Length: 105
Length: 112
Image (spheres, rainbow over the protein chains, first blue to last red):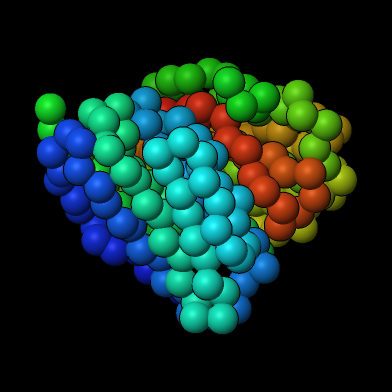
């Protein structure tokens, strides 16, 4: 099956900083999602982005399917952005190990 | 609120107990999923149902028994579990299999 790798595994930021999270996948994909898991375990949909770029407020994502990666950008980070960010190859229902983001006030 | 609900939210059970987890989706979707999330491990797909038919069983032990009576409801029946089965169990749904998924809040299970 497809391998999904996320980097970095951990990220600590000061409030207001920007960050880029990366998701690499080992084969071509048709459907890719980004999620934010809050401290209570709820997985919140951020983007469904098989290719191209999408933006939602301070967050944006870009998937370059031919290069087999996707990026999640968080700008002007807030403490409420803390949590674990997962990318998932929906074709295979396979998740990466996540990036744990901590935003300090 | 994603339109996917799970009950109970927390469950503590002994190894000899029988319990069931329930998932309900109000999105009109046709596919439903069970995932397991153990501490410090990625989410692992357990089962997939598409139009009430099981289409994926990811080598899950038989002590986990899924049931999908209709496209809106999904159950996971538990019996004779082991302590290592303690985890967060997440349900998801999508319009069709392999489409954008929406997750419920999860059931945090502890097996004593």
